[in-house]
Image 1 (cartoon, helix red, strand yellow):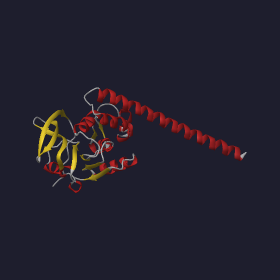
Image 2: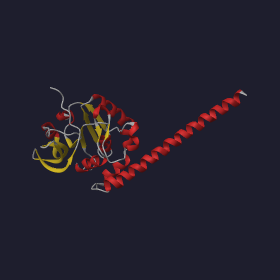
Image 3: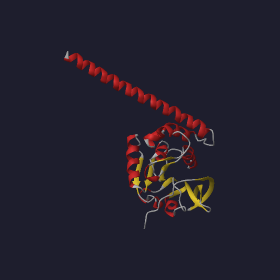
Image 4: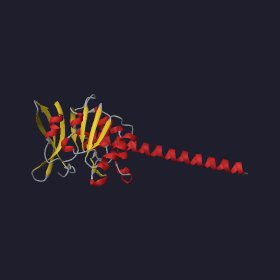
Length: 239
């Protein structure tokens, strides 16, 4: 009788594992459908026209970059809280900022403000190399682990002061700042290639922020105002 009991136990275990795998597959399929709906409704339905950006937004699993309890809300077009009082930007803003740096594929891109790593993952799908800086060490560490687990080998994460950029990795073809800065930091201008694009939310009078697109020409930035936005502040370290 012992071997029969063992056989039943093994079969029950296999069935349970199969049911679990089927459930996970079904859940991932549901997330994939929600992701494509997000692309159609919130990105194509607005002014996101770059086919490569739309493809990346439709591929990267945003639900893996939010708290598990918020996974079902991952494809709503709104910011969501992450650890340490920070947020993951709404999908439309991520797509817009990515579109504004006009990526072609061979670029080396600097991101300031890693957060959960979602913007870095989008960039990693589109360019040769991404360097991303996060001032909060805990967020930097968790983002690095998350990106590695998802197979992103072309992203380097660093804990440090985003206002100072990443001088050891210069020059950058494009720079994206994903937190509201009090001004455009001079080190970022210096680290941007001639002809490169910088996208950054900057504080403006009245307590608001404006998303700027800036191209470097003859060592100076030519800026263009894109839209009013609201980002968490770019943290400056205590001196």
